[in-house]
Image (cartoon, rainbow, N blue to C red; front, top):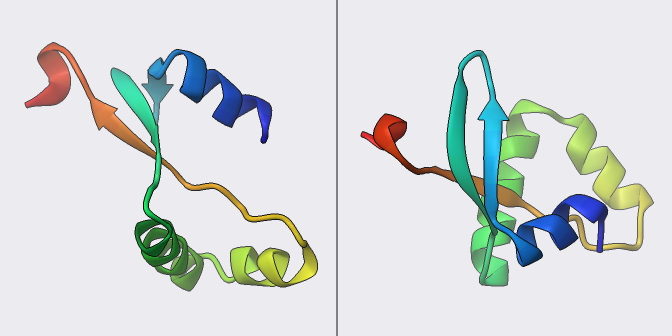
Length: 73
């Protein structure tokens, strides 16, 4: 388990900065079918992720962010 996944499991509240700053809850994508769907969707836009998946034996986790607080609407 990577450090980011471990932190999300202990304390899912984070602050994101993706062109704008916002508070969010980090969630590990579950079940496996949802993780697979999201991974495939992302790797369709970023083919390097498919290549990396083929070269590693580990299961690559997918993290989703859910906005919380006033900016959530």
